[in-house]
Image (cartoon, rainbow, N blue to C red; front, side, top):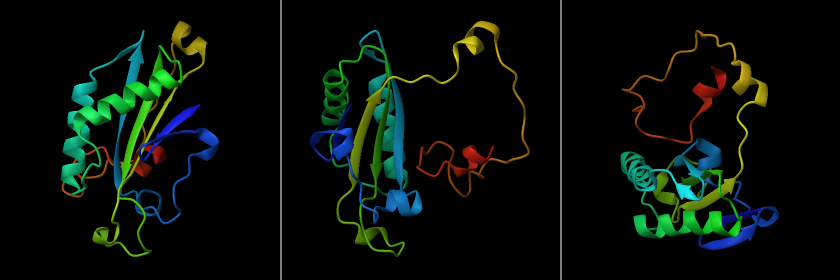
Length: 159
């Protein structure tokens, strides 16, 4: 699998992010999950607009323009010879020190993964599945606006 990482297309075995990256250390970053159906990127411009909004909300400057991001997403799909896929576009604050200070992270990290995705076994699509509700509450909008797709997904994982 080929991964776009900070301006280069690399094999997944070579795709490395620093252990000092604030996306890893603090969940400091944003992402979009984009689908590719029959070779067509679904609502790519809307996804990139939402990514821009999320980045602006956390004061993270995107390293590429919308047009450059669109081309990088499309090229990642082409290099992986995909017609149907899930694309994860991630922008982190980038490497810094162990403190929280975002201004000590001079360059964001950007990576794009495009791959096939199987969310559920085939029988769930054929027969349906059971769902449950959980007591886990969403993070309040005063703490983190729900419209910001941040890397902090722990609330969802716990649910």
